[in-house]
Image (cartoon, rainbow, N blue to C red; front, side, top):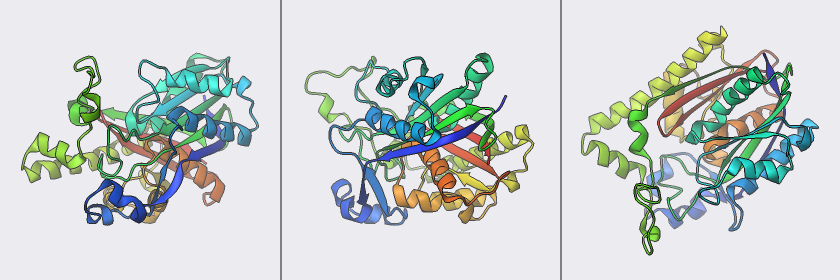
Length: 338
C-alpha cells in the first residue's frame, strides 16, 4: 500500500521581523538574539486556527486538482488550542471545505502531529480499501492570553497552516514509513495550570493563568541541577536520532543517505546540535526555512514539503525525513521518497 503527495498549500499570518517585535514579548531582546530567527508570522485578531487550516487546505486541493467533495479523509493536526473548547476542530475544517463525505480525524500530538498524521492516513488506507484521497493539515495559532510566543519554548512561535493532499498509488513523494517514540513521564512538562477538569476556570481566574516559560518549567522540575537539564537536552537529541534510525531500518534506507532532514523550526543552535547528532551538514536541514518563518507548530514539516516541491532542489528517488519533538513527549519521523 503506497500513497504520495499530489498537492501542497500554506496560509501564514502577517510576516513580522523578530527585531521589530521582540520588546513586545521580552524585556531583554538579547535573550533570543542568538536563536537566529529573522521573522515570524502573526495572524490578525479574528483569524483562528481553523481559518488558517481551511485556507491552506483549499490551496493544496487547488494545486492537486482535487475537489473537496472527492476527499475520503481529512486529518487536522494542531499544536495549540483552537477557537473553542468542547469543539471538534477537525470536523469544523471538514465543514469549512464542504468535504462532507470525508471522515475527519484530529491529531493532537503537539509539534509532532503533522509528522504522525501520515501514519494515520496509512492506517485508514490499509483498513479502507476504497479510500483514495486524503488531506493532511497542520495548523498553529498562538493563544497569547495563555502563553508568550517568544518564551513558551526555545522558539519564536508563529501562526500558520500548511497542507498536503495525498493519493493512493501516486508515484512521487511517496510515504515509506512513520515511527513514533513516546515517553509519558514528561507529560506534565508543558500544560496550562487551569482550565481543565482538575482545576476549572472560575470567575476572575482565567486572566492570571499562563503557561510558564521554558526556563521556568525546567527549573521547577530540576531546580538548580544544570547537569540534569543538560542531560534532558541531550536525551531529546538522542531520541530524535533513534527514531530516525528506526524509521530508516524499517524502510531499508541507510540513515546517511537521507537527502534532507525537515525538522520542527527550532532555533539555529538547536538545529546545529541536531545536525551534529545525526552526522549531517547543517545545509541538509531546514535551518534557513526555520529562520525565515519561525516555529509554526505541527505545520513546520508540511511547509517544508511545500518548499522543497516548489524549489525542485531534490531529485527523484531522494529520501526526505520529517522529524519532530512534541510535548508529551513524542519523537516522530516520517520518511518520504521523492
